[in-house]
Length: 110
Length: 114
Image (cartoon, rainbow over all chains, first blue to last red; front, side):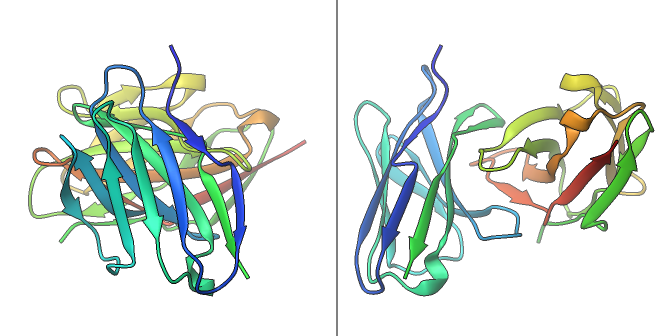
């Protein structure tokens, strides 16, 4: 049974650019959350998707947006990248109260 | 508002010695509690969780944690650590309903010394 998968594993962008990160949940999971983990910090909740709609959002600007597809996979889009957006972006799929995390996408903004 | 405090940013310990990683939380409502481990350049792996019932929870790799409601703590313990336990450990809480989003602590880096 495949776990949560994310692509790409690493990404380098420059300030002002836009980026799209992708996530496929564990089989049978229909809810996907995204977290941002800055260096040396704990993950911070960005938002959660269920039934192709954003259910809850953390304290992140509108530059961060997402999408969920009918097959439950999800994308995280970040526009107008800032240096401070450099981080590990983690996707998690949920089975009731427990979240299962993917390996993450490491984004470096230069 | 919920919050999680991991008081120790780094914990060095010798191999085969016991270890305790501390986690305290603040919440006005009931919570679920979790410990995750993160190895270098990897995602988060679930170690154990407390949902209800027995306050002593056993997890993978010989780890256990005890939920103490009066002290709002969920400390992680292992009686004998191995070099391979060197990693970052995160405590997290979530509400017991709704989206179950997690609030994480800042992490504790466990360094096991030979």
